[in-house]
Length: 142
Image 1: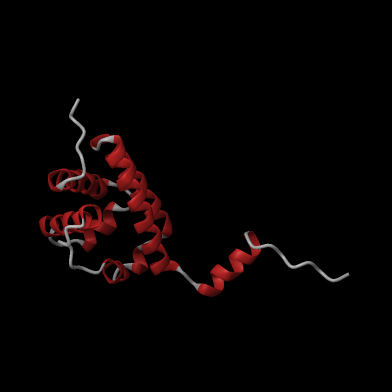
Image 2: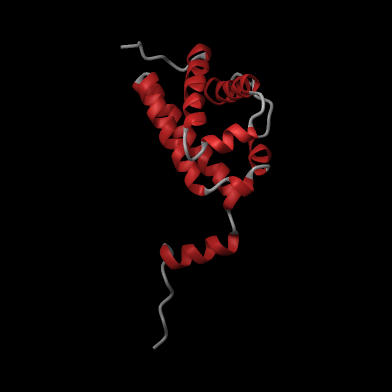
């Protein structure tokens, strides 16, 4: 069995390379990523810098994830975020020490939620859905 890795530059690089190799092979999200990414070595370095900035505070990432994803909005469906997160959980559980995996999974869930809101949030739909499902209904006058 391979030793579990911690969250450091080498561990993040290994995680990102392994994870995106799986993403590229995935039936649902692989085609989107393979069409969108034209230089995988550069993209993997950028993603490693992103996670380094997020998890280590390195400040190496200088990009803007929301506009990058917006370019592909017409091909991204909400269930793709669930698939991405499942693959991320599987890969982090396999490669990382348990505490590191949990930290990475929690951060990924927040990032996916944020990107999902940026791509799919529609205030009128959201307000209607919240009224219909979560919010207490006003009492009707008899």
